[in-house]
Length: 95
Image (cartoon, rainbow, N blue to C red):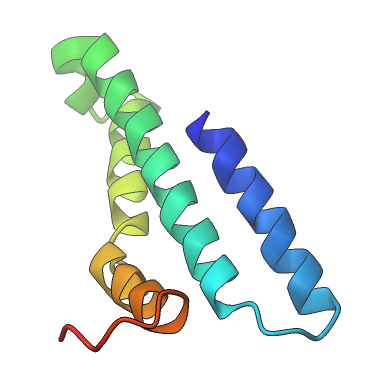
């Protein structure tokens, strides 16, 4: 479900971008959802592999590190939430 939500949001953001319309909120939402979905999947893989999930002989360890990076670079989840709160929900700055 997380992956489907992320993929749907990517398509919405891409459609807006291609038509020349503002898409900041949609693009940030897509990044947020995709990073969460990737981390959840990688975390489940590590959990499934147990201690071997951290072993460098298996790709699971690398996928987990890379999925974690998606949540903090180039913008963090908190920065995305601040952006959406200000632009989409018209809330005051919280930082």
